[in-house]
Amino acid sequence: MPSTPSASSHDTPPENQRPGRNFIQQLIDADLAAGRYGGRVHTRFPPEPNGYLHIGHAKSICLNAGLAREYGGRFNLRFDDTNPAKEEQEYVDSIQEDIRWLGADWEDRLFFASDYFDQLYEWAVQLIQAGRAYVCDLDAEAMREHRGTLTEPGRACCYRERSVEENLDLFARMKAGEFADGTRTLRAKIDMASPNLNLRDPVMYRIKRAHHHRTGDTWCIYPSYDFTHGQCDSLEGITHSICTLEFENHRPLYDWFCDALGIHHPQQIEFARLNLSYTVMSKRKLLQLVTENHVSGWDDPRLLTLRGLRRRGYTATSIRAFCERIGVAKQYSVIDMAWLEDAIREDLNAHAPRAMGVLRPLKVVLTNLPADAERICQAANHPQQPDMGTREVPLTREIYIEQSDFLEDAPKKFFRLKPGGAVRLRSAGIIECGEMIKNAAGEVTEVHCTFDPDLTRKVKGTIHWVSARHAISAEVRLYDHLFAAENPDQTAEGGTFLDNLNPHSLEVLTTAKLEPSLGQVASGAHYQFERTGYFYVDPVDSQPGQPVFNRTATLRDSWAKAK
Ligand code: ATP
Ligand code: MG
Image 1 (cartoon, rainbow, N blue to C red):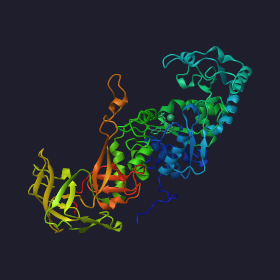
Image 2 (cartoon, rainbow, N blue to C red; image 1 turned 90 degrees about the vertical axis):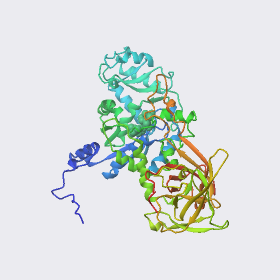
Image 3 (cartoon, protein in one colour; image 1 turned 30 degrees about the horizontal axis):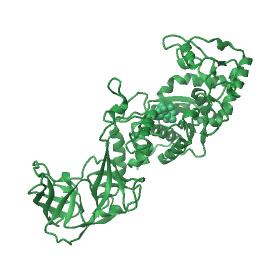
Image 4 (cartoon, protein in one colour; image 1 turned 45 degrees about the horizontal axis):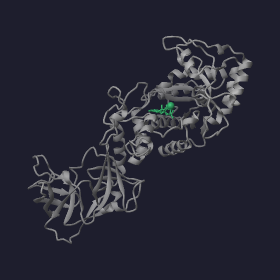
């Protein structure tokens, strides 16, 4: 047995130099080595409840929960619910369900930014008292004008020098509902000339009469995200506040608030958000796809929402493996969708029972079998896992094979069924091609073959099949990328991402013929249909005895050589 280095062994590299560590682990290792935060690691996932979670969120969840697990630390779930106009209980519920499904556990640490509204209000008052916040009467337009640009400093407005007393009075009256929406804000008094625009007196509170899904109508002023996020992390004792790169410029502001209030300082660490080819990830665009019926709902199997992926047949294991494999980086990049498909293939290849299903049937008559013949063939449920057992598959005089497994004018290298050729029927025997029956258009509608049960005979090709008499008819849904362009946001002048929708992203097959064992399947079960892909029993549209199968992924390699 190889020896595992013990923690005390002198040749164990110091924690902060362990090889193969990503930059976040290295930063945390260094913090631990320096005794920062008393050796604690506490992370969180902070979704805004204004949409459903997608694969990008999964990356953040796996990262944060994974770090907590790795370091024996803690992981919180906190909803950043500071924008009541766009947030709903429906999203709060679905987000929790999706995170649980993914396997991340926040234990009893479920929080809401709105839990801290009283505390945030007190802190705002404290900053006013310290002369570090003021009530501003500029409207949004004027505020933008005063703010300056990246190349020009901003300008102070006349309200910046209001007295502490006046600010306290006005802020209390904002809270009491004396002023109309949008007429006043509370702003941090930082630096109107800062090169970082986020520090040019950012808004801390705005007046907005909106019903909040948790606090109801208690408040008519709401804290801004920037005045909320860092302090929530601080209140929860978060040590490493991991977020995406667009918040890098906000870090000095969060630090300013924590310093000004004299409260615990989490370390913010930014990483590049996940982008995948052939898809969009912005919640606004996902919402548009759903509300304009370009997809069937948030769980449409073509969407990379966690519900969509789940309904497509993706497992939580495969998504975690994908997130692990793509790692974290500081550089922006686009991950090829093939990585995701590889992850699910790997998982299902190991676990999904095999079965036979003919997606586009062509009738084959085995002319040397009597009409009432029924041969029982034993088929292995998994080629590498004998303990998954075998099942009986009936063979009869009339069977279906895949249309694409027969070619009348076949090239030499075509090792499936062709005139004068022979092919193996998986688990049954060999068939030799005889007469072809054609319709008026000259298309082959039926092939007559002779059957040879000799399982030891060698032929080059093996195909799947089902008995016509026993076959169950099922709806099978095949999916392709939702967008035809690798980057859907790249459009012609004046176009939108919708122009890049792939018109062939969904193909519904209603004439598929499946082996009889697939008639009684559990909703949510996974199968590999030999040679055609991994399929998932759709939990929404399947009826008892009438399953609907969603293709999760195609097979990378066919088992053409398998027996
Ligand atoms: P929007 O699409 O409106 O920008 P969002 O996706 O950032 O919103 P949030 O609810 O704020 O939505 O996200 C919660 C957390 O998930 C944040 O910490 C954010 O950094 C992270 N996150 C969101 N999208 C991705 C992504 N594509 N890759 C990695 N992390 C992401
Ligand atoms: Mg966000």
